[in-house]
Length: 401
Image 1 (tube, helix red, strand yellow):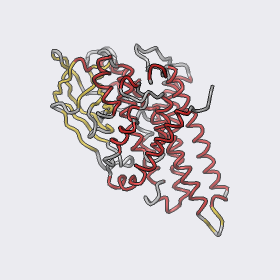
Image 2 (cartoon, helix red, strand yellow):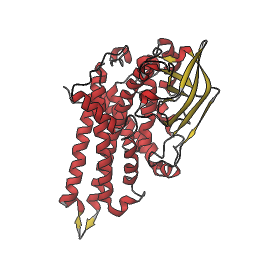
Image 3 (tube, one colour):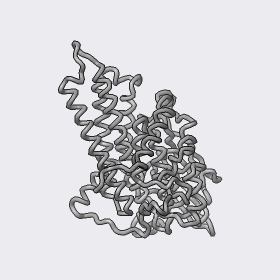
Image 4 (cartoon, one colour):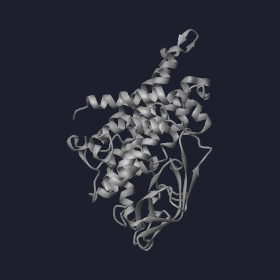
């Protein structure tokens, strides 16, 4: 296995790091306090090609591989989680779902403007009573001629108030013998009649990002907007989660790095009794653990990205990467606050924001309790991945660029 990054990978790192440091970092503390995203962030991401980074050029993207997507997520979350969330839902849950499951007509009609950043996408799956228990969602879709009529409400949807399209899974067959078999997925225009949406406020973290709700009341969605076949909604959604969890894992790795760098810088200048606290073994132990966790988390997500490049099923590896990286990022952020002492309790330093932001990733895209159950099933050989009708396309430089 080659652990080296290509020049293209380094180019992606430099470009995204430069954007995040120069165009997002200077205002992120203000935006976090205001509880809203800076208006220039998403348009600038589109201009730089970040929104379609891992989509083939023929579909409007940049033609880069899945490792590039992971590296971009790491760099974005090293500044703030809200930046990475944009990529997770727009690219991971929306664009990659269309790339994997969409027809050529759907890709040309919807994926191209999404990859170019002309339109913004999100994933609308979670409901107030169904998160981890996704098979039992209550939103419905009933066939009516050449349309499906959607009713219900989705909750905790990132970019709900700013997205143009949403990948939405609803129950189309309430009589299916198994609950998960009665679900279907659609690409929904969020400007359609019957849709209302708004932002949620009072969040613990990711305050500089949009998180909201979307309600559907007799919303007419064309039959041709179904993604995959009727009854494949559970498979479509779970494969979308594989992509989303990959971006979350990569982003959480960036947060570990941010906590590590902030802790090292503070410990080197903070003195107690004339001695730098970076010379104290208890502080060194905390920083050493952050460094180790960063290296491990990075290897886990890069392995998942490598498998995605090969077109291999990576549910196990992506789940492990998400579980480990998010747990480690929460630990690293907590220790960073501890190292900063009283200053870590103030938003004058970014570590308290890291701590607040890190908690959410342990819940969304499948809680870490769910990830532990997934890993247990694999370890006990109670779970075997069946080949999907449409696997995520392997990266091919000749045909993607």
